[in-house]
Image (cartoon, rainbow, N blue to C red; front, side, top):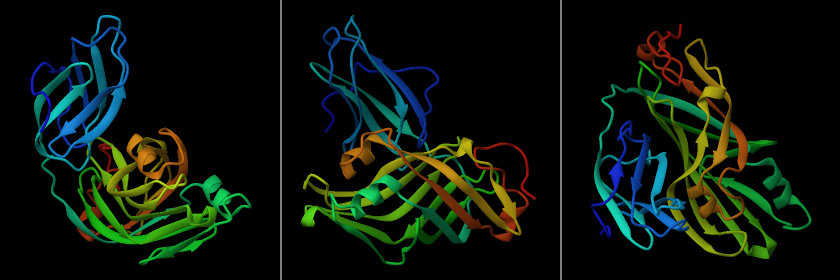
Length: 280
């Protein structure tokens, strides 16, 4: 149950859609109060931690989770609690089925070097369909795409288990999922389980692990195959909390996605990011 449902203003220009950018503000906090939590309900999701200004006004701008729709309550929690009911509306999308997709990713080169080095003295193993060939892990999957703007969802099977420090570190990342919205927002979700580098237990399913910068890559379609090569990936706050080794904002290895497009998507699909040009 949210601790408050009033006192929070959702500012004009906010986009109440999955992955939409939202700006809010609320008064009544202590001057320069730090550690104010931005929490979304019903199942509580910590989105951020912010600091009020000298007048006790707290402001937050950020992105809603890409997987949520429906009725929710967005709150700021500190010396006082403020909240607002919001409705996250799903975009009206006509999806076409993708039966074959591949995700190639090195995870993070420096982390692999650390695991295999003399300090951690560990290893990694793949399972459930994932494969490894230096320097990349490969996952296969399927999903759906919107033929007008290439938004959609791709789910991949497989897992990577990192171990080290004589068993203290035993972290498995599994079941990658790519969510691409028609706003050009893209995120990598992972299941993270086991124990972190510090030995803390973790069991986080469907974590928004990394933000993907689609604007940095040029989509290439050839013979019905869409390739997005070298997509920059940045660790999110939720990913940092689950994985426990790097801070939010840490650069991960780039990701490459290859999708075999259905025939009814080839002539109409636009580049990821929503540009109104056709893919031949």
